[in-house]
Length: 107
Image (tube, rainbow, N blue to C red; front, side, top):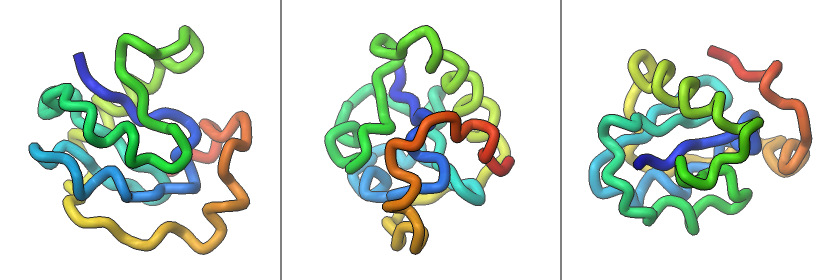
């Protein structure tokens, strides 16, 4: 099992989760973070660190969120590793909990 970053992270990209990861499985894109499922050890340390609840266990994904497992898998192969927290985008608060953000994902 792995943890998956879902839609709420798009355009928010809080990185609180990154520093607690013992295996460095987070990767950063222009406006989204992903978890490499092959590196994730299912420790669950990242999940409570996400201030917007964008990280879910693979087992807890709703049907409409299952596409994010594929997105995390695919993008983690090309996006750079991130191991230290950074400031969130200046407009992150405005994007929290907004629906239908997938179309805004910059790959």
